[in-house]
Amino acid sequence: MRRYLTLRIFAVVILIAYLGIRKEISPSWWSEIVIFNSVALIASLSILFTPKFHDRAARYFVSFAISLWAASSILSSLSSFTDFNIPEWPSDLGYVLFYPLMITGLSRALRITHSSSRLEFVDSIIIALGLTSIISIIFVKPASLTFSGSLSELFLTLFYPIGDLILLGLVFSLAIVQKRSRHNVLLALGLISFAATDFYFLWASVTNQYQFGSQSDCGWLLGFILISESFWHKGEEARESLRFNPLVASLALLLSASILVVSSLRPHLLPSVALIPAMATILLAFIRMAIAINDAKSISAERILARTDELTGLANRRKFISELEKFREGESSVLLLDLNGFKSINDRFGHDAGDDLLKRVALRFSRVMPNTGLLARLGGDEFGVLIAGDGFELAQALRATLSYPFEIGGEAISLDVSIGEAKNDGSGQILRRADEAMYEAKRAGGGVVCWR
Image (tube, rainbow, N blue to C red; front, side, top):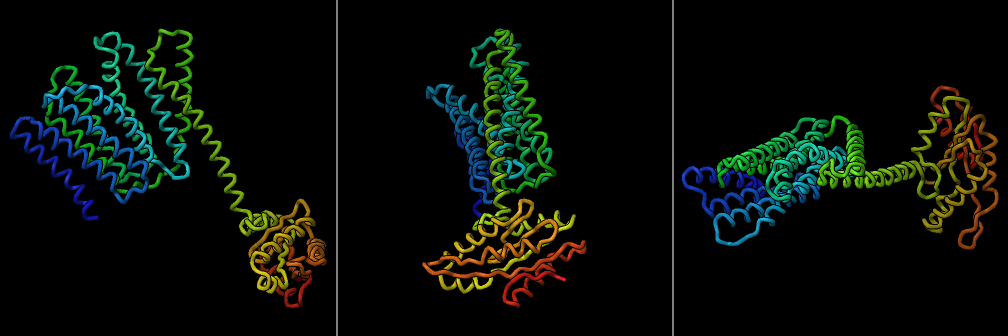
């Protein structure tokens, strides 16, 4: 833990040292290539090795995004301070890939709950892509009429501010439903620092006022340090579930579909670059639908398993207690059943034979149960029954199902059951009374006892 703390402090120390060096000397290859970019790389390692943030995917995506940015910065610095003939496209590609990687990592870092993280992540990407389509329509068409550079230069000029806006919009849209915490505050400040520096860099570049290696570039490094520090603090739980995301995602989907319809009717009205995020939004909507259906099936299956006895397939104790509240509302009876002699059979023939015997007993009991009743295995060799009205006749029928023997290991084994019955009288003691009646039947050697 101490070496990780040293790693966090080291990034701040190097940044301060870089600022001090820049006041004394002009930019040089070792100050810009080595010292400047080492701050970003150390911040990336700090995120990667933090033991407090358990979502590995979030750490890997954000760490790799910052490392990719640092690698692109190194390539740009090499072109400025050396005679190497390095093309611009590798560094441009690294800066472009920084944004989707950062968006993906931050979407996971700010997720609200583990159970719904996949849907929240897809919703966030749909919102981001929808926002990209809208911004592209607003800015790309006018910019393309006045910009004199190539299409790739136009794309890069517009992509960076759009990427910064998407990052800020994504983070604040997710953070707004969470409690204020060090994690959220540091992350927001880090992104603000990075985006503000990016906007200043773009403005200074367009107005020919930017100087390579200026101290304003430290805003990027400060942003990375704050982002990395946020991963050393746990986020707070959400105030409530993220209910606005599906609504906003649906609106983004509707706008994207409208863009495609308008583009098909008027091909030259909208910029072609806006069609890519629009089509990606619709594709993600279908993916979201598949995830939602799969999650719904999983939740339904989990609910069934949570209320079902794994061995016999009957309702379990949780289901029995839950349904007991409903049966108390009217005239009803509770039966508690305990098998006589099951322990000796289980000890003699083994647990596998005992489990098989319980399955066969449950099957016999199920055959005489009315559709309106509930049969549950409460644990071990104890069963419970809920039935509307009087339960004495059903108790006799359940005992009668054990009147003919079971065959275990080639032997005929007889089994009996002790049953206690209690009627609902509104006192809330029905379960305790049925239990007392069942133990009275047990002491008598078996049979049915009604609580009086």
